[in-house]
Length: 340
Image (tube, rainbow, N blue to C red):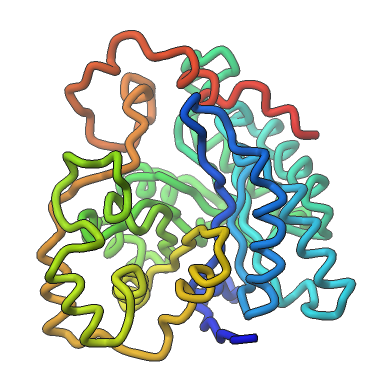
């Protein structure tokens, strides 16, 4: 069996985070319902990932996969393949739990679902607070973050951070928090380099983790997205130059920017391919070519939240500002997160 060695980035608090992880968000079907029936495939994929060298797994309360993630990790620990300290687990507090006590309770509940003694990293999933009916609760994310600080102080978690926070929100958090966030998880792609935000995070020793790092590169439904697609001649030529695939080129490009990526795949050859990016360097002239694709295009935009307090992204003119399909509200408001 092929093996990979994935390097670590150092967090400001002395902990380390693997530079590439395994995402566990299974997505939605055509009815916008969670693909929970793919859980057996996820378990098999994670088993394989650990066997070949993956040590970083990204999940969340919303994903409904915490029990499966914990099952695989504990199985591999019992088998002697890894020790607990070898593994880095990230999970996230959902919008329903933004009051301080609720955030703390959410961390404890995640710990129970994972079946672990501690969680390596817990993030506020979004700065927006929403109740189960979809109403904007307008709870200050500073209150939520205090719940995470309490979880860290009590040994439930090793590091805490945020996700989908913009620069202004990070500045405000840094001015009021007791424990600095170790991570900001955001979308970064070759269409969305987020240079100002990434630079600010680096200046504050906050590690950037990128989700949906391929953006619209491989998404057939994003037909109106700006170039490139995965079959772009420029990308194909650069990938062939390094004897790599286009997706490997993109992941390596982000790694060279000091950004952690967490691609998801349920296919063994793709899981191995995603992690086989640490044996080459993209030349500076080619980095410059890739940077030219940056146009500020964000492929993952929850536009149905943009009237809510603390919405972190630029607002858009869109038909979704009116009535939102009920199925979209049901999953995006996180209703029925009854996984305890």
